[in-house]
Length: 416
Image 1 (tube, rainbow, N blue to C red):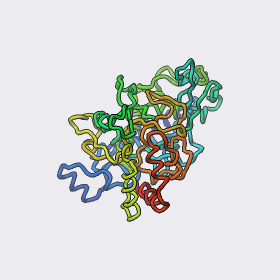
Image 2: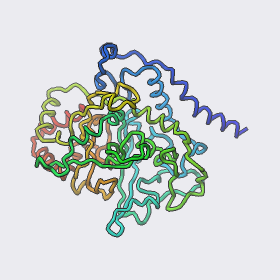
Image 3: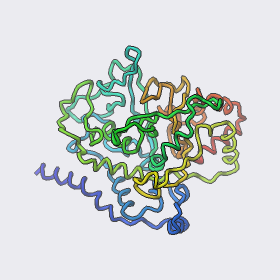
Image 4: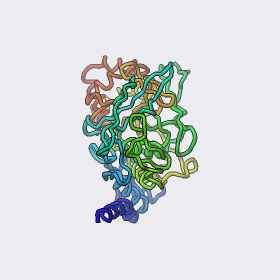
């Protein structure tokens, strides 16, 4: 009887998302609908609320968004491969503030990356359960993952918002590379460079764009990695379960990928790819002045206000044409920058060094609870003050502003 009940539960989890496929998209803003009917792309920032899907999705694609959201929010079971060590039961556990697809609600949900220098070379300690640790939870009766004694660096990581991920994924590599200046040839003190990283899904090196150090090049790679690291479920692109404290867990009985056909991984991808970017608030007089100050301080040298996504001829594989030819107002160049000693964490990923970080997109900042990679502060001013390296000149200018001007700039950031 118990085996029958378990079988029924698993059948519901696998097939329930299919029922969403024929859902119809609710009515959208008439202006957006007119744009769609005229074959001009809707302005994706103009007609959405936080956590909404992209506007203009046709029914079946909207169904894929709903199906993906269901998988994203549900708890996973041991019977389908959860663990043996993992960080939480669901994706939304770390990406649920203030709505599904957001970021941390509690600093207790912080995760960790580890590493060390061995004979002059960086070691990500993968053989001991690193670089990212799956150590927050463990299946009952199984050995928990500990922080290895050999870990020289232990770096906290706050979960990032996922709003607008499909737009970031749709930006061409050429667009990202066009803003790179690794040798600072223009002598402006900014030397952004791309993180060239391997894509397990496409089996080639590509320009990184996801993660704190731009260590994943595509959204599907980012998704598969999160599934194995955070929930402990392997998939076709990440087929091997992780070791526990340097050895295969006695609880690991899988003979192949637990998400064997990638169905659930692709459900996650659909949800994130179709999740609209965060809306931007109307600027009042203070925020308008703050935007001008933001520009004058040179913040836009790295936090580029917008990048345009590829067209359909460049990216015929896009899940929906709504993602093509869009201005993504993410306020980032998606490049690596040297950020000084205060933000140095020791972790190296791809070609990213210990003090290098991807320019954090600022869209959605108004709905975040914690700032910086380790969630060390809830104060935007303190987050700015921690900037060093290439951002030193802009930071110092900010610190010299009168309090009213600083407040205006903060008000602008809170509009994003």
